[in-house]
Image 1 (cartoon, rainbow, N blue to C red):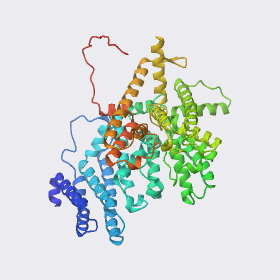
Image 2 (cartoon, rainbow, N blue to C red):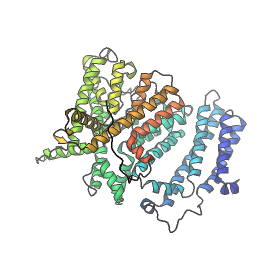
Image 3 (tube, rainbow, N blue to C red):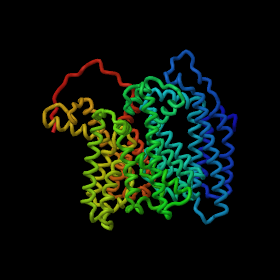
Image 4 (tube, rainbow, N blue to C red):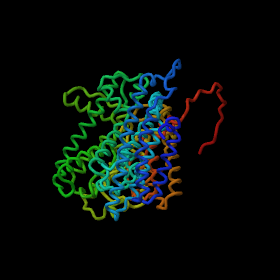
Length: 587
C-alpha cells in the first residue's frame, strides 16, 4: 500500500474516498465502522510519505521566477501548510474514534450527523494535502502573491476553510451531537467575512474554545488579512516589495509608501485600543446582569461583543442576544459607538483622532480631506434618515411593546446597525415589509471604504449622486465644493452595477432552491452580500445548497466584486486598433 501510494497519489486518494463513501453508508457503531476508522487512521502514514515527498521538478533552474517566488521560500510554506493539515487530520481521526466510543456507550443519542461530518472532514484534509503535495503549495502561494487581488481572495478563502475545520474539532463543539461540517463552514466564513449570519446559537453550539476561534476569525477578517500580515512584518522589521507596498498604501489610504509602516501600526493600535475600551465598559455593565453571563464567561462576553461590534460582525454569544439590554442605554450606546468607529473606515478614524490630538495640544487644525467629509456627511444623513424611518414604520410593528424611550433607543441603534453590523434589539422577522425593503437598501449601501463593513460603500453612493446631479445639470461632477474625476464616477457605476448583478443572480438562484418567502430570501441575500448579518430568522432553516450559496455570497461581498473580477481575470492587453465611436440612445 505504501509503495504504490508513493508512485500513484491518485490511487491513495481513490482509496481514501472509497473508505469515506462506505463509512457514510455504514450504520454507526457497526463492526464495519470500526474497521473503516482503523483503515483511515493507518492511511495517515502513506499520506505523509506522499505529501512531503520532494518532486523531481520542484527546482526549476534557468527559468525566471516571479519576484514573490524568489522572496518566499516554497519549502517553508509547504512544511507549514502540511504541518497544519497533519495536526487537523490527527484531531479528526481522534474525533472519529471518540464518536464511535460515545455511540457505543450512549446508543440513544443521535451521532450519525457528527460521524459523517468527521468523515467528510478527514476526506477533505487528505485531499488538500494530496493536491498540494511536495512544493506545490509553496509555489502556488508565491505565484499568487504577485497578484494582490488573487492573494486577497486566496487568503480569505483559505482562512475560512481552515476556520471551519478547527470549528469542527470536538474541542470547539459544545456537544458532540451538534457537529455539522456545513454549518461550521457557514459560521467560519460568516466570521472571517464579518457578516454575522448564524445557523445556530453560538453559546449552545460552541465551547469557549470554539467561541475564541470565532472571535479570532472576526478580528482577522475585520482588520483584513493582508493588513494584519503586513503589520506583523512591520513589527518584525521585515520589508515588503514595492508592488505589495503600493497596493497596501492604496487600501489603507497611506499618504505614501514611506508612511505605510506607521499607517499599518496605527490601524492595529487603534483597533486594539478601541476594542479594549469598549470591552471594559461592557464588562462593568454586564456585572449588573449576572443571569446572562458569569465568571470567566462574563469577561469573554464583553471582549467578544467589543470585537464583534468594532469589526461590524454582529455576532453575540449571549443566549438570547441583545434583547435583554433594550433598557440599558450604556450598553447600547457603547455598542453603537464601536459600530460607528469601525464602520467609518480607518483613514477617516485616523484624521478624526489627529484632529482631536491637535485640539488638545491647541495646535492649528488641518482641513479634513474630501473623503472624510463625504463619509461623515453621508453617514450622518443615513443615520438620521433610517432612525426616523424606523420610528415611523415600526412604531406599531416590532416596537409596539416598547416604551417611548426604548423605541427611540431601538430606532437609533437599528439605524446604526442595519448598514453593516447586524446586531438587533427587535425581532427582524416581525418588521413590516416596507421596513424590510428599506433595510435592504441600507444594507446594500453598507459602511465606508477602508472599514470593517461591507456594501457598495457610502462614498460610492455619494459619487453616484454627484454623477446624476452633474448629468441633470449639464456640468462637471462635484462633491462638497470639490470636482470629482469622471474616472471615479465610472468606478462607482461599475461597483454598483456589478453588485446589483450579483445580488439579483443569487436571488434568482435562492428562489429556485429554497421554499421561503421571496422577501425573506431577498433580505438574506442582501444581508450576506453586504456582510451585514441581519436575518428574518430563516438562516437555520436553509438547505445545504442554500447555505453554500450564502457562503459564496458572503465571500464575494467581503473581498468586493471588483477585487473578485480582477482576481479571476487574465492579463488584458490593450487593443492596438481604436474602434470608431457611434451614439446609442439612452433612456
